[in-house]
Length: 333
Image (tube, rainbow, N blue to C red; front, side):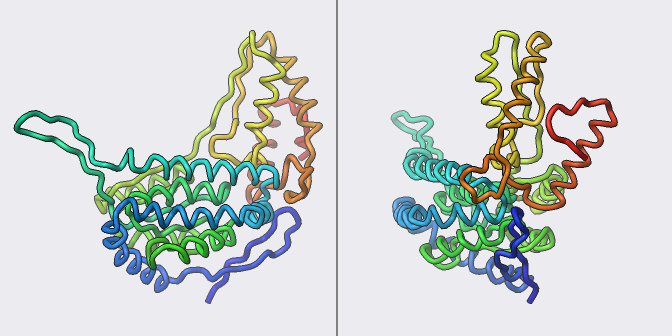
């Protein structure tokens, strides 16, 4: 059986390994999910919430263990990982607290002879494919809401965070009915086998290129698809902006999780009258950031998750230089 290694990007230490899911494994987990779905739906929302509330309490008790693993596996600075975990629990709490409100039948029209109602029924088995940058929250956004709604889930985390995926699987698979939540491991080839099953929905976060392929598959299967694809979030600084506040916000939104955020600030548009001041203060702020091992609590900027990410960034710096960019901080390549 092939193994998938987890490597700490701070020091290239091998943290552990998991077995890459074979086609037989994936088919087996799909069959479990399909078999479990009717019962998970039929126990009703109240009972599902009971299961999930108990499971979340177990997850919360393991915060320190998880954020250390997340920091070591993907290079997220440990303080960012703590913020990330707490935010995830806040999302979960909102979903659980508001599930009854949003999933109960809705009366849209009523008179003496007619009642029109909308019912919110589960879709079935959902394939969820997520990236590595927020292992817990990507699970929450893609899988947890589906579990509340009565769907069963087969999740494929990125191959960059298999141990975080295994951590989540061990908690949720052990505390929910068999087959309700399932995880598979591997690269895009494993994802292809997953979406070839008789699934009812695809949820994907990742590149536009891969999203297009998955969307085509969903169209051919005539099933629902939810996609969060690549983008480039801009920041704008107006002439009358509070410059110190702007710099603080720019630094946070560019550097959180070592800059590896789907909606991280990637372009900055600055009014010409404050441009020089912004460059000067940003340069000072970036120079003062502590770069280091992700699990060190003093670290503000950790490593990128993998060598390929660093190579991509270096190529972008070189391209910018060729096109006339003036590098104010770093960029010594």
